Image (cartoon, rainbow, N blue to C red):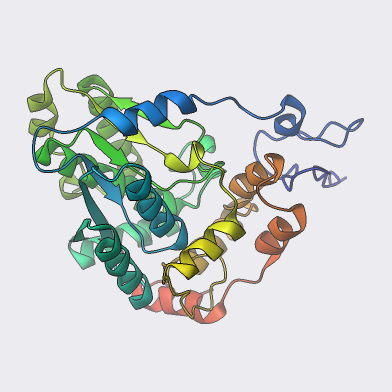
Length: 331
């Protein structure tokens, strides 16, 4: 007999998600039962206020052009005006024109240096196609937080931003990850950690069948040249009071323009709808559910809005666009 689907009555996680159990007595998942996680917000705030580089750049910033990253960049410069930022937008071949315009506009507003980072487009198409065709290339902990395609894209972004930080001797790397996408407001990057991080992503790429992958990874000689100098990844949205609707309202008043995309979740990427559809077909779970559930638990998003997001039909036009660009036969 097929097991009955159970859904947490507080957030939106259900029993289809690997590792999630719903208590039949309380109707709650284990995350809701344990309460909110404590984070080292004071230390992260101190790091942002005092850590500066010896060169021309203090922080490498991941700027997608979406509402969260534009908001984070603007607020970061408001609260730490002397922070010298190199804002990097990764061109994965699927960035909406409006996202590029938003990114450049917010760099101008904040006095940040804008850099468009591009790699061989054919290589990226191959990597994303292999990610779509792969099964279980990433561990469960990664698969319940993001699609295989997004995990791959984010993995490349992290590798290349760390490379830029090493080249520019920048002590900080900043991401606009929201609560749910990550749990720690900062991560310290020693040479030992970077060796492990590089090797882990290389193995994940190889599990997808991507063998010639040096262009996607941190050059090992840069890691060895780091010595005892430490870098730190910071997630400011974990130390600020984050609410999705308030963030969008704030950036709109600053001049951010919402793109006219058929995808109502992503505000920067034309690959997102296909990535979501691909993940749901392979694993039976929505890759945004874990993130949205965390926002619901912390009172940052209503349960109704979260359910609307995960139950929203993916754009068939964008899915078809991705199939054609990645040369994947649609079944």
